[in-house]
Length: 263
Image (cartoon, rainbow, N blue to C red):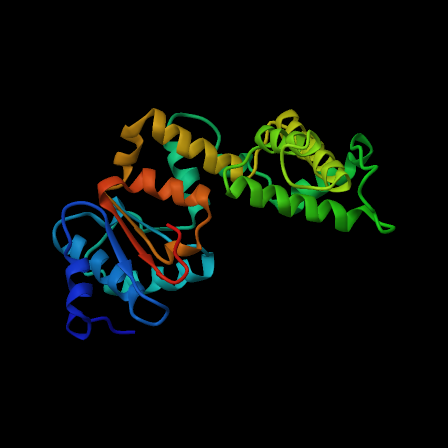
């Protein structure tokens, strides 16, 4: 796939060479946002920025693999490492850079591992209000998915429990039956977090939270990269969006679809 500035609109060419400060590349699907990011990467390298000082963030591994191949084809010089990462990979890299210790990814359990953990200890959960439908597996899998979505939106177990308590106190919309379900899920969420803590492990949401907190406490960590380029930023949930903002600073460039964007 060839990429040439001559094929782009004036606003797109301006985004490629934009400096200083953050830049947002807007366009619906198929309008060349990824090409602009790719050409910006090449332009930054041509201006003297080392490739390993640029992080490229994509919402999915498959998209990252394709973009990595394009960038490798574009590079006219050697480099130590090419950082094309999903948000969790960026979070792990920054946490690892904060000091000695085990690799952050090694201390992270994925959804299937956490499902197995909770299933093994299901007797510790109070599930009187939820309908098992003959099997706890589907219910617990749904709990794990919901916990992951809540963490992706920067909602932890205690914040959720507070919201659930307000339901039961009549301070938020919801029937008594709905309030009971949410209070019960809040306790499952807390139990999930307790089990992770007892195992000395975390999940992707914890890693994202820790990375954002570290960047807030130690802004110098953001100096790991001079530029952070984010493709399809409209697909990022609030937690990874907060991460790339904090990591990118004035070197942030994001490609977004204005129809879908909440970035």
